Length: 147
Image 1: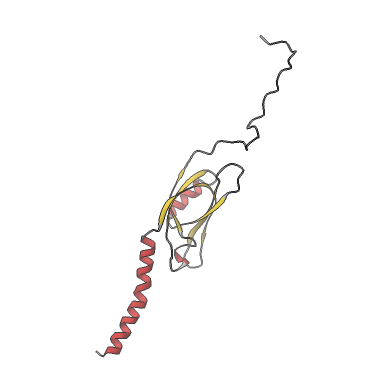
Image 2: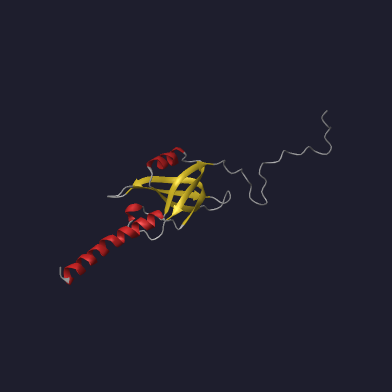
């Protein structure tokens, strides 16, 4: 075999295998993982060819504050079903972050949710300087005491 066909085959193999190896590494080795708490606002199945579950969660730091949005992707239909069941409740999403994915076919975000759990809602807290509940009216000083 001459050197040119061997060189051409090597180049083609590298061009085909390199993206495949990179994709496998990017999907199986996470950059970061963790948990985020909030209220799931949206979850929908999107994509022209590759359908993935894409969602958005409002993360509220304190009542009355403007929430941050956490956009995420779910690859497992069972996890997506659990998220839909807990819609509107305060939840914690467990996720892994995968950076530099070569295509959007794996998901539109780099945050992939692997599980969800419900947590107790935050207690109602009043803003500073505002009473949480209206105080009962005070009895006048000259009113007779009740037995």
